[in-house]
Length: 112
Length: 112
Image 1 (cartoon, each protein chain N blue to C red):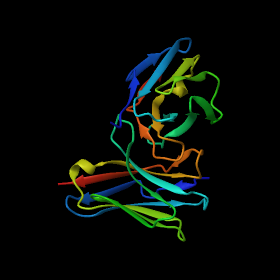
Image 2 (image 1 turned 90 degrees about the vertical axis):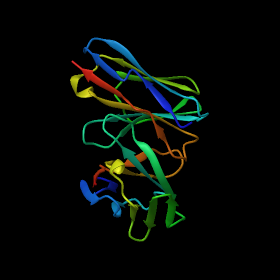
Image 3 (image 1 turned 30 degrees about the horizontal axis):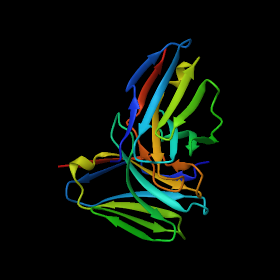
């Protein structure tokens, strides 16, 4: 059973608009969440993270929101750029010393 | 510097061959990881090393043998692999087990 779910396999957005990528999780013990971006034939690149004690973390164009009661997090990219086109993975950790659990990814396409 | 390097970039091997994948980081990270990623799937954790000791083995077959010679290096020795082991093998490192992981570009392995 998937503990981290990214229900939208793909998302298309126009350049300059907001991209919102969503992620749901089932395990209330998860304490740390991360977003990674992956281009074809490359390893995932760490984007941004959030601890379960926070509800928002911002870094430049990227903002992650966490709603613990809904077990939901989202990544907002504003403004979206064509170079943001990639696969975005949500990941969660169940405590120090445990492995990251990844969602299946969402492919973002930003058109100019 | 947030670089994790992996060699080789591509590897083709027969089922009777013995080969090794190499990973290196110079960020002073004390945790290192091996992941396997099949097409259109998220990365799957294989092994975790913390302070050069194996701390997690996710029930990986013995034909995969990890080795951590020192805090900067991580190897994955391969022997008698099967065609279904063909995948992208990713190495990652992190400051500790509780922090974000940085991934290398991966080794694309094909088993014939």
